[in-house]
Image: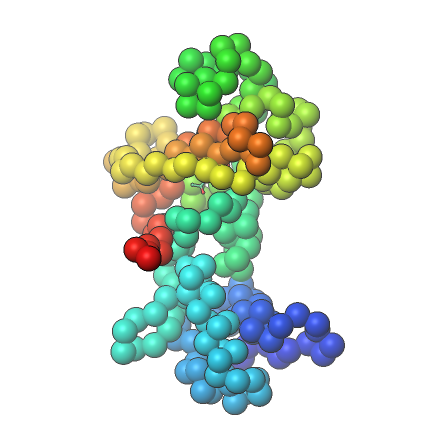
Length: 241
Ligand code: 16G
């Protein structure tokens, strides 16, 4: 099987189109975890584009974590899910970028009042209204993470505003966060969480706590995400310019 072809009269830049074909290839299992991406010059010949275009396409997917480079060996479809630690993205977007379908099952969702800990973390006044969401997140039906989110009440009209993606619901009402602080910690899964994720108790997990803020600086979310340690790599590009 082969990667798809460029669609005629597609106006978007060629490197983006090539990225899309590679994403589709991964999504449809033409390319699988660990598979090598054809060499730059082969792709350039096959798609009749410059090597610069190919390099740009592949470089972008490496940065996203969908592909990974191994020195001297080539470029491969990343095994575990690699997630950028510098991009403010949602679970749904992270999965879509990998050609995987995100879904959730609800554990609970309810309006409430901020508790003292959340109030501290978000800088909300005592008693401020919030919405709470707990859910299991799946990639193509494989459980990946547990998420417990508390959203400031002024961000969403009600808990029912969220169908599958919290960030798309926030976006719809103009309240998508633009800035966040994250903290990461290793945690062994307790029996209850392990069961929800289909792993053994004591399995290695990554707890990521995100505090996210709106453009005007008001707090929007505090979310605790428990990711399966065997399924995720968090990657960050560091610079010292
Ligand atoms: C990610 C975020 C989480 C956010 C969620 C929204 C991390 C560590 N956490 O899981 O804070 O609430 O995405 O995803 O990345 P959604 O729009 O798919 O519901």
